[in-house]
Length: 281
Image (cartoon, helix red, strand yellow):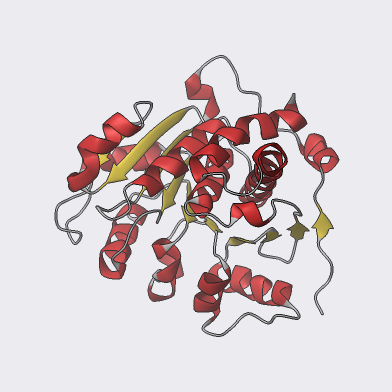
């Protein structure tokens, strides 16, 4: 069996703290969310809103041209940019510089084509973003991508099925933590899977709470956006994943207590701010 993880509580998080927000959106970090499709355009909206709700200052959405205009209306707080029409085309410098300047880039929410996702991931990585967070289809294509083409700071947000894909075998039901540690070492990445966070080198943390209400469409997009939002604020990847997982779970507990099971992911995103305020004041 694996060595036990550190149990995360509000007191632990208070001892860690968060960066001073400063007096400007520029001091709270810049995030770009890359994803979306005609079938699932809302995923990038949920992830982007979540990043802002945990305190990130500036948000960009890089999406297929087919949904660019509608997302500009759905989330007016974001700068919306269009991906190249052909996924094999390079990202133009005007957009690439936005990726390079971002404090964190999230790739995956809402993508629905593996080939296009892989090409987009490589095109994004070519601009050397400071920190990369992968979710959904971004995880599914990771085994096909050379690790050295990606940034040193990498965070993976798999569910159990996606974790099995990264391992090329089923997670061990009796010792999933060992398998997550194997993923962390294989990809030199922080891994967050259902409240277990593991960093390369073996450090690990465990977050409890959230309940069955988190099992709702779009919940994972909110979680990925929260993690990326904390990373954009300047929190190192392991702690960013812990913060994101904890506020996501706490938001679920708050909504369950208030409304019961059946809340929506967009309500979960809005609840991240008061959940975070419980710790930071």
